[in-house]
Amino acid sequence: MAHIQFAPFSSVVDPGFWHKLTEKKLNEYGLDDSERLIHGIFSDGNAPGMPPQLNLDYLAFNSQFNPPSQSFPAYGILHNTNTLESFKEKDKKLLLANAGEELWKDFQSGVFLQEPEKLCRFLLLTFADLKKYHFYYWFAFPALKFPERSTLTEEPAMLENIYSPEKLTSLISAYHSFQTDRPNYATCFLIQEDGDNFTFYEFAQLDILISKRNVIVGVCDPSSLDSYPGWPVRNLISFLTYKYTGVVKSIKVLCVRNRTHDGVKHFGKSVLLTVDIPALNKNIADVPECVGWEKNERQKLGPRMVNLSNTMDPVRLAESAVDLNLKLMRWRLLPDLRLEKFASTKCLILGSGTLGCNVARLLMSWGIRHITMVDNSKVSFSNPVRQTLFTFEHCLEGGQPKAQAAASSLRTIFPGMFINPSCPECPYRNILRIPDASAIM
Image (cartoon, rainbow, N blue to C red; front, side, top):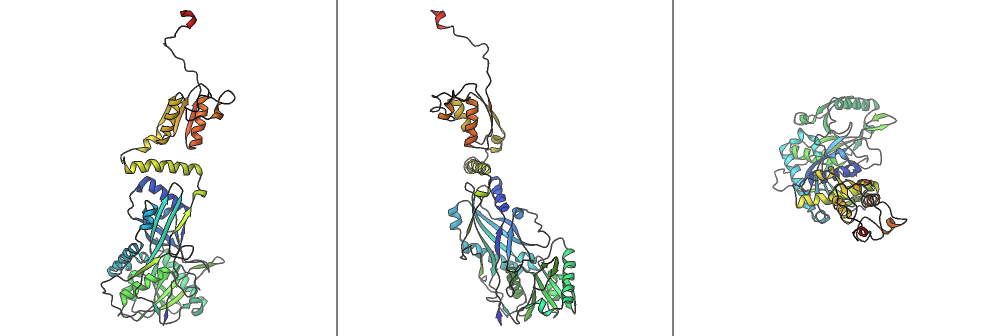
């Protein structure tokens, strides 16, 4: 009997996911590194030669997750660490073992009969360096080695080689009628074959229909390889083996590949497997070994890193870095500090001398973005050594107006500042005027 080999997922992360993670980290998670529920999607219509792909985008964090039409959900757990050292030191074996234990418990409870889509799971370990916009990550797609090696009683068969075109058309029609009547496409289902006709049933009716010879277990398969089903098929076969060991000797599994060619759907590349169900002891004390860490771009087990700094607006990068510094301080020292009050406050500074320059920089460091600078004098050569917003160039050609020079320097330091320079003459009323010295004489 031939062993079944499975094509692992290849992760594809949209930049929108990292932007959303940044937003969540700054505004919601803080230093809390608790695990979070996220979602991904895969498709059963990958083009020939494409690896099975699991996609994540900015919608991955939505609590109410509805995958797009003709896509299927994958349920994930995000472990976002606070430091690169924590990311490196995280016990990867323990993470995967815990995921395998949860999978095994769900095998035992039979929850997959009602929610077969939850057979497709993943872990995502991350560290987000929000000052550099470097994101370190490592995916795992947990799969139990139960049995140790899955085997076939017959060679895998492509439907285009065993079904007539008319029969394939009948299958496609029944499939789409079944899926379009549902709010979301089903990942797994049952197919009853009667000559050239097919009837689809919910996966929950597995116990009722499994003993019938003309019933096939269907699963939407992201693989495009002729003889190798994708990763979702692996956990399905493990679950079927656990549930029906000693009950049936084999089960037919149809790996549905819903491709489009010239605008026409066809199932010809779908693969029919006849899976051996060995007699095993499923009441074992130890959870079967769990595998599934993804290989990196060098085809070795290890994390990946994506650098998004070149794709980001530099002003937004600066804003994010400034906000991160303040929020780190709040998270660690002053949890009740309301930074949003600072950001919405508008300040007026009268005078752009030594005190005014330093106050402006201090306000900027605390997240205040709106400042009006008032001063009608000009920068002199004695100013730059004491007044931190001025340089030698500001003194040339008679000196630039202080308010305008200070505003320009603040924007140079941080482009996210909104500075309004003003150079009015401020009258001083009811001020005692000292007589001219010659008059005293």
